[in-house]
Each structure stands twice: as C-alpha cells, then as structure tokens.
Amino acid sequence: MTCDQDALATSLRGRTAIVTGSGRNIGRALAIVFAKNGAKVVVNGARDEGAVRETVGLINESGGSAIGVMADVGRSEEAARLVQGARDSFGSVDIVVCNAAIRPFQGMLEISEEDWDRVIRNNLSALFYLTKASISGMVERKWGRIIAVSGTDGYTGSPNRAHNVVCKAGVHAFAKATALEFGGFGITANVVAPGYIDTERNWKNYPNLDYNEVVARIPTGRIGTVNDCAYACLYLASEAASYVNGQVIHVNGGMYMH
Image (cartoon, rainbow, N blue to C red):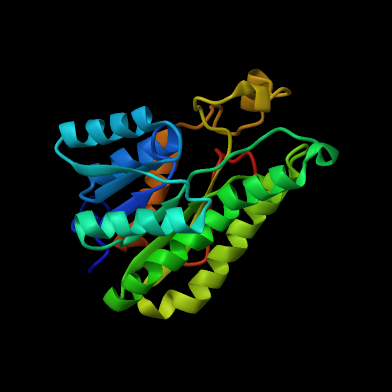
C-alpha cells in the first residue's frame, strides 16, 4: 500500500484490534479512535465490566464494531482466552495494544514479593502472554502490529515505583526483541511512552504531584490528552508506519527528550 495522505484514515479497515485496559482513559480513547478508522475492536478490562460495556456501546452506537471481553491479561490462560475470543468473533487478531497497567506508590522496602509479582504480571508479562498467543496468526498472514503503552519511567526512573520502572524498561526491551525476530514477517513491535496525561486516576498513588509545576516544565505548555496517545498508537497500527519497528514514540510535549 502506498503511504499517501489517506493511509492513516483507511489502513485499519478489515483489521481486528485487541486493546487491553480499554474501559476508560487512554485505552478507551484508543479503542474509539481505532474503530473510527475501520478496525473491529475487542475492548478488554479485568474488573470494571460496566466501563467495558460503556466503551463497547460508544463504539457500536457510532457505527463501529466492538465486543467486550473481561480477562485478567496478567495471567497467561486469561490472555490466551482473550485472543481466542477475538478470533471467534472477528476471525483474526491483527493488532494487539497492551495498555493495561497498575502503578502502586510503594517504597522499595514496602514492596512485598506478592506486590512485585502482581505488578510484573500485569505490566510486563501480559505483553509476552498476548504476543505469544496472537503472533502465530500474524506470521501466517504476514502482517501484524504489537504496541505497548509504556511511560517515561523506563527512561527516567521514578522513586517509590521500582516494580513499575522495571516493567517499563522491560516493555521497551521486549519490543526490540520482537521487532528483530518477527520483522521479516511483516510484523512490527513498538512502544508509545506517554508523559503527563489528563486521565481519571487514583490520586493516592501520586501524593507529590503538583499540577502547575508539571505544566511549567512542559515546552508545549499543557498536559497531554488521551487522544494524543491514541493517535500515536493509530499511526503505529497503520500501514503508514510499516517501516517503524522496535521504536519508542514519546508523547510528552517535549518534557523529556530521548
């Protein structure tokens, strides 16, 4: 396909995308933007079924095509069930966006083994589970997109979140490994790393965040929106980004430059 001005708007037609953690925030924006650009979308969440249903409803009511599948993708059997559900409903899985994550605020000495394992499973292992479950079909069709939504933590570090920092750095490394192994099959693996984004969140996990101080450090002079992230992922999922592989796109208004 020629990468012309219409490539972004049309290249998801006929594709099926799984978006984890898409009941709200960045994940919901991703699911909606993908659907508007022609993808059939599998909306996923682990706990809030009502939010997943709402995202599905927003897509279907606007003329798109979506289903919801509840699954804890931090467990391999649940990730495999999610992928199979997408295949059963839409025939294939072409795009996987691993967006679901947890970011508890814990000093290193406060992190139990259970805490560590839970964050690693949800924020890093889920990417491996979903990729392993879906990539064989992508290899057969000679086309696929693996996209992880990460964060700046993997580059800058962050106090009181050692488990999450490890996951974010690991996500970047996993994308590189996947890009090298499967690039010859028409499959790309990339990461979108958001900076400060205006989302609904548990503010107990951000006790030291000063909104005005943050904005003052961003060259664009504003906090990012969920659509800023969604359109970066849309680009990576499209044919327009077929030569972008093993990369991290930083969506942070220039606050950090890597």
